[in-house]
Amino acid sequence: MNFIFDIGNVLLHFKPVPFLKSLFGEQAVIDTMYQTIFCSPEWERLDQGFLTHREAVDIFCTREPSFQPEIRQTMERLPDMLTPIADTVALLPNIKEAGHRLYYLSNFHSDLQDYVLGQYPFFNLFDGGVFSCDVKRIKPDPEIYRNLLDAYQLAPEDCVFVDDMEQNVTAAAALGMHGVLFTSADCVKAFLDNL
Image (cartoon, rainbow, N blue to C red; front, side, top):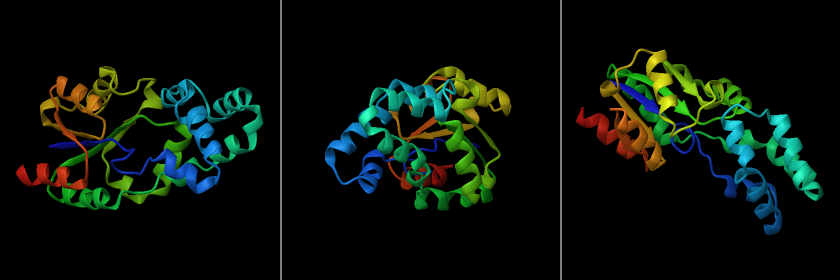
């Protein structure tokens, strides 16, 4: 069986509001950074690989010129938000030892992709994967799933797709994969135990 993992909020924490609270004390600044950066159309374009980190920063600073220092700080510190979810990471060696293969499929920026692959050794357990920024598609677009399946010659019925977003799990299931909606590592463990 092939286990395909989303990254954000499955393998690594992605919690913008607590992250922003760790950077700034004023609620007005936190709210502005959240709306300007994380709720922007540019955030999705970063995931799609249509914008560079620098281009996005320039757009954000033009949109909110009075918050330029805070915007630059937020964007520079994004890697600090992406810390391992220990319970999920602890399952990865067990999945490999049981004879299964590991892949990732994630909406991700190119700069952050380079960071996490270099920072966290558990990615060495993976047999491959696809980042949205590399294929110019984001979940739940069926094409990003097909890209992964084609790249590694995987049969959908032999794949378990784990994601914290219901629409992404639904899209995978529509292609014939086994979908697991991630709420905690226990749901992955339960699926693994049932195999």
